[in-house]
Every structure is written in C-alpha cells, then in structure tokens.
Image (cartoon, rainbow, N blue to C red):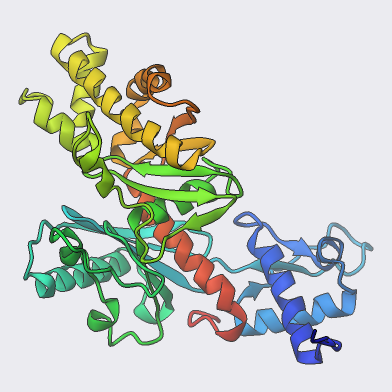
Length: 391
C-alpha cells in the first residue's frame, strides 16, 4: 500500500481556484446583472481582500467589467464596488453540418446568438473540398452578420450527423458511405485561425446538451434526446453523463434497420414526405396541419408516424430505461398531436414507458448545443487565455 501525502495548495493554485470561483459566480448571473463585493463574499465564502484582488485581476484581463455606480444621495458615502461578467469578452461560432444544409451562428459567452447564416448542402462522396469551402463561407457570413471579427472568437464548435469519437473524428463504417461523407477536419479549412479552439461532436449529442442547458431535461438525470427529422439519432444522458461509446457511436441508430415496423433510420420528416403525396403539404409539418384540419389521409399518415415513433422509443426504453425521451429538431415544433398519439401507443410496446416531450428549441437545437459546448470549452480554460476583445 502506498500512502500519498498531500501538502497545502501553492499560492498560485489557490489564486487560480479563487479566480475560477468568482468568475463562475458572475458568469451565472443574468445579462445586465452585477454583484457587489459583499454579495460575492456571501456567495463564495472568500475574504473581502481576496474578492477585490481577484475582481481587479479579472477586470484587467478582460473577463469582468466594473459598471459605474451612482450615489443614492448626498452623505451616503462611497457606493459599493460592483462587478459584472462581460458576455462580449469573446464569441463562439456554432455550426450544424447537416446532410441537406449547413447552419452557422455566432454567440456571445451567455449563448445569445448575434449573427447567423445558412446554405444548402446535399453534397455526395468526393465533394469534401466543396463542402469545406461552403462551411467556411457560412462561418464568414455569420461573423459578418454579427459584426464580429475573427480575432474576437475563441472557439468554433461543429455538430455532425454521424458518430464522433473522443478524438473528434468519425469512424470508418464497415457498410455504407454516409459517415464517410460526413467526416470533417476543421483545422484543414481554418488553418488561418490557429487561436480558435476547434470542437467536433455528434449532432444528437449536442442536441442533448442543449435541452439540458435550456431546462427541457434534468442535466443530472437520465434522458434521451431523439433527433427525428431526416434520420433518427439519439443523444443519451445517464446520471448527467453523456454516453458516447468506444468510437462515439452509442447514439447511432443503425439497429433500426433490423426493427420490425421501422426497418430504417428514416426520420419522421422523411417518412412523412414519402407517405404524404399531397402537393399542398409535402412535409411533416404539413401533415400535422392537415390532420388537425380533419384530413383523413393525413390523419392516417399521422397514426403511422406515431406507431413508428413508439416502436423506436420502446426499443430505447428497453435498452436504456430513461426517465424521459425528448423529441428534437424542426419537426418537434409542431408535433404535439403526434407525441400524444405516441404516448397512447407506447405502452403496447414498452414494459417501462418513459415520459415523452417535444423540444421547443426547433431547428436551432444542434446549433444551441454546439454553442454551449464551445462556451463550456472556453469556461474550462478561461483563466489561461485572455479574450481578444478585452478593452
């Protein structure tokens, strides 16, 4: 048995811990809110001298601002010093790299989107160079829309509709070519931006991060985020921990090709287009609207979609036993009737049916998750870097 004796923390590490504690406390405040030194003392348990020294350093380094204070009236004495987190200290670029379109957004450090862009994709194998160029154009257009310079960005975060391993790469599948088409190496087309942290994650995993960050699921709980638009894909959270698998393929749902009544990864939007031939409503949303209006054919399609969704969720319930399944993506915004039908059907397939809800984050769900991942990356390294936009 080896006994390890741990000595007292060094002065440098103690300062680092104190600075991180104060910065995180202010980062959690609402936009426009500031805290006095006394409030920070109460929240952190640090001494006044430590709080003021840390805040002065963080102001100097660009992470905090000290808003001007106004005396309440004559004779009240010097007003207390107040400190506020600078959400504009740096920016994050989020990119949702889908098979049909590429969406980009620029956000501040509280996740507020300040500029966005979108372009059609639909590229096939062998067009990776064109795809990279389009992604770069979307990023540049997003920056221009936001009025943000490239040197104000600290992280770019990408979501792919394919498994992404811990190293940020997509594994080579033994069958099919979809994953190979989705592979992405941002460093290759962002070589002129070496100061950016580059993150690549699976889109469903980022969507799972988004619903937790935006209060649609318990971040510390057991839930599955099911992207259900063009292709089914799942982000799996167990006890607050995102499950990736050895190669990042834990949420990939290729097994649906073997499931009776489903037989493919085709999502709800794609299935709706295939089943609903009316030119008036060639989309899942159109089917939902027509079913609500009493169209019998649309109602039949809706029941088939609900049955398909119930079979998929029942399989996830059998494997993972989550408390909650959140349906995500643009299709979820109008899916209340579909979700209700699925809830009614689910007990026929699942022994332990989970709760089912539809996310209200819409088509931005992957972008919001990518932005959150970028913010988390910056927050983890904030004290080792200086924001380029610091005044």
